[in-house]
Length: 120
View: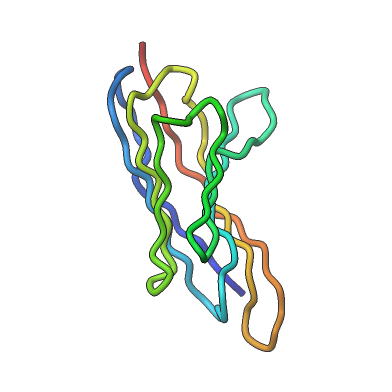
């Protein structure tokens, strides 16, 4: 079983910055992809950014140039630096990880979510 624990959400004014962090723990053999998703009230969960173990990244068009995802493979952590925040970024942000646990069992885990609120 692989657990993800997020931290770093909060309330910020438009134009401000926040940094989200996520740490994976448990019976991890390897993590292929780590990423961040978000879900606003009444909307579907959407990809914000993700990064592979090799360092390849994908970003939602709405956050390109403002958000930066980074990963520490040795520590099984992933961070999301969010700059120039907009009220539209308000959502619950979820950490996600996909990989292999011990005994070659695949896993796809989610964190509990951390709230980000951007005031105008």
